[in-house]
Amino acid sequence: MNKEPEDEFLMNHEVDGIKELDNLLPRWWVWLFYITIIFSFAYMGYYHLFGAGDLQAAKYNKEAVAGEKLKGEAVMKFEAALGVLQPSQEPAELSKGLAVYTQMCAPCHRADGGGQVGANLCDDYWIHGSNYVDSVRTILNGVPEKGMLTWRGVLRPPEVQAVASYIYGFRGTQPANPKPPENQQVPEKPNIYE
Image 1 (cartoon, one colour):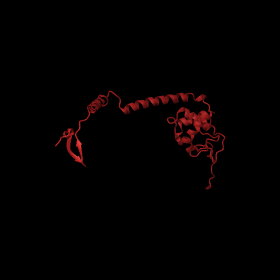
Image 2 (cartoon, rainbow, N blue to C red):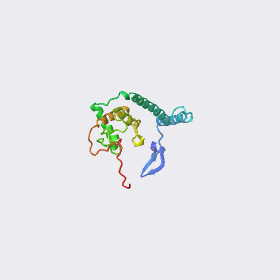
Image 3 (cartoon, one colour):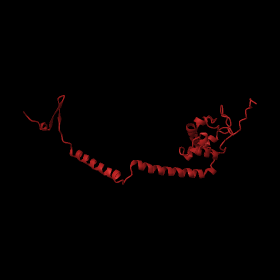
Image 4 (cartoon, helix red, strand yellow):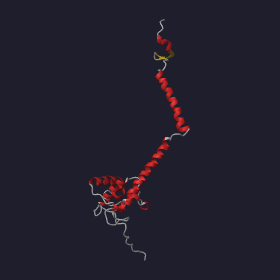
């Protein structure tokens, strides 16, 4: 019987007429495998045993704190400039305000500003101030006791200014089925039992 060179690598394992060979792995592959093992021990020691580097959660927390600080500074600058803000008449700014209003405000104030759960934005009876700066403050700080969310951490200052400019345009319009004015006293009903 003539022995093939690969016969010495044959294993006693056969399935469907296919014999399994016991080949050695290439040396580059074996060295790469050893390098990954060494790297894993170095990584575990550096990050987990000695605590020399930040883990992902700690790194995320540091970046989140830095981001919140930047956001806070931007809002503080924005609030400091509130006294001189005027509603924008730029079409691009009003278009941005419409997009924000449609997504965030219309569910409570309706698309036409007539009020639903939220206040009517079209009449002259504004509860929290009727000028533009009051609108910006109300959007930023919200009115939690009335159910209006604070948008301080959600909307960026330019978005707040854009939506306040858009809302400012609702004044004097006549929406279909508006919510009645809220800052007037409701007439007392006569007591029928007297």
